[in-house]
Length: 251
Ligand SMILES: [Zn+2]
Image (tube, rainbow, N blue to C red; front, side):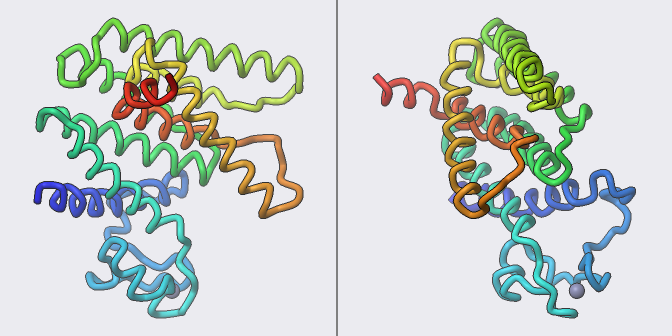
C-alpha cells in the first residue's frame, strides 16, 4: 500500500521536475507561467490534460489542440521519478531516510534532465546536493558513515577531475565538463569512498550500453561531448541502494 502511495507521489513530483528541467535557461520560471502549456501552439493544458503520465498515454503522446507530438522526454522524467520513489520506499529503513532519498533523487533527476537538454549541470543543484548529502550522512539519516561520505566526495571529484584533465591533454578538447566534477561531490558523498569503484563501474557500463545503442541508431554521432551526468546519477543511486548486492554478485 505504501508503495502505491510512494509511486503516485513520485509521479506528481516527476511532473514538477519536468517543468523545472524544461524551463531551465529559457527565462521562464517554475512559477510563471503558472499553467503548463503546449510549446508548439501555446495551448494551456487543462487539469485533465495535465495528469502525469496518464494524460500522455490517453492522448497517445500528442497535443489535444494542435496534434503536435509531445516529446517523450517529459513522461520519461515522470516515469523515472515514480520508479525512484517506489525503490526508495522499498529500501529505506526509516521515513526520514525516504524523505532524504526523495530530495537527493529529485536533484539527480532534474540535474540529469537539464544536462541532457542543455549539456549543463547547474551549480545550484550540484553544490546544494553535495551539502544535503553530507548533512544527511552527518545527521545519521543516510545509511552511510560521515567520514566515508566526505572521503567519497573529495576522492570521487578529484578522480573525475584528473580523468577530465588527462582527456583534455590528449584530445585537446573538453570531454567532460566541470559540472560533472561538481556533481561528483554530491554523488561520491552518497556512495562513500568504499563503493566508489562500484559506482564508477555501474555508471560506465550504463554509458557504454547507451553509446552502443546510440551508435546503432545513427551512423556518425559527434563524439565531442557526452552528457555524462545522467549516467553518474544512475550509477550513484543504484550503488547507494544495491552496492553491497552488486559486490556480492561480482564475487
Ligand atoms: Zn499544441
